[in-house]
Length: 82
Image (cartoon, rainbow, N blue to C red):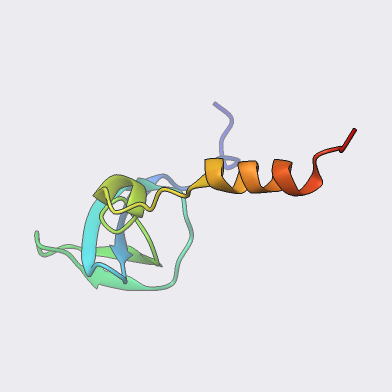
């Protein structure tokens, strides 16, 4: 690998503000914020609005849209009349 061209890959804490959940992982994201983690060490902090803890797809709270009814109404409204 060439030196000084790769971003710094380090431990970073991501904090989901909507679910009040944080997790520690590795990332190259740049941030000026820091937080003291459960192990007593200080890590860079990135705040996000949504994560796997709060996303409707992962929580099972997603809404299914009745597209069949919409498609049928569209076809009936704009069907060519012979």
